[in-house]
Length: 276
Image 1 (tube, helix red, strand yellow):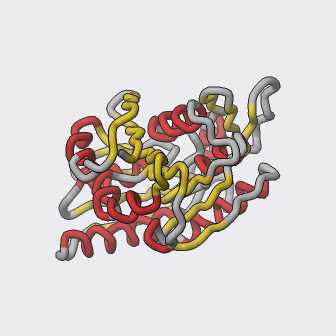
Image 2 (cartoon, rainbow, N blue to C red):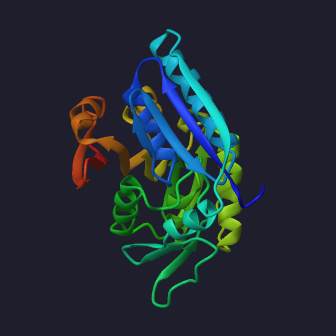
C-alpha cells in the first residue's frame, strides 16, 4: 500500500449501539471517533480482520437475542501522506506493572519483562484499560506452574503475561485469526503455550487454577456456565471488559463465587472471583 493511503472504517449499528461500541473498544487499540450513530476508525490496515470480527460479533449477538441485529459496515481508502508515520508515533510502548509492551518500531526496555506485540486492529496490544486491569490482576497472583485458560485471547497478550510468570497456558478464541495472531505473538516472544483451539470455554472439559475472560459483559453472561465449569476447586476467575454500570448484572450470574477483588480504571472494571 502506498504511504499516501489510509483506510477509514465506518460502523453503523442499526440497534444495540452500546454493544457494538463496547466490542470495538475491546478489539481496537487505535482510538475511534463517534459521530451521530456511527463508529469511525482509521488505520493503515485495510480492516479485513476487524470487519470479519464485527460480522462474527453481529452473528453471535443475533443468536443470543434470537433476532437479527443489523449493522452497516463500510471501508474506504483515502489519501494522506503523513498518516502512517503519525499512526506509528501515536502507538507508544506501555508499562503495566513490571511488563513493558512495545511495538517493533521501538526497543525493549531494560529492567522490565518485555513483550513485543505490534498493534493489529482486530486485537489488543496493551493500551486498553481492561488489558491493564487484567495484567495487574495476573501479576498479583502466584501463577507459577498453575494452569491458566485465556478465553477470547485476541492477540494473546494476557496469555503471554501468564506464561512470562511461569503459568501453564491454554488459550482459545472464536476467531481463528485471533488464535493465529496469538500463536505468532508467542513465537515473537520466544514463549510456549500448552493448547489452543478455535472456540470457547465450552470446547474443553479441563479444569484450571485461573480462568481469564476479558470480553464484553453480554458474552460473559452467555458463556457463564462454561466459564464456571472450567474453574478448579479453589480456583479463580478473572472477568474484565466490564463497564462500571454492568458490574451487578455480571455478578448476578456468578453467585457460586465470592468477589475477591474489584479494580476500576476510568469507566472499566475487572472482577477477581474465587469458587466458594
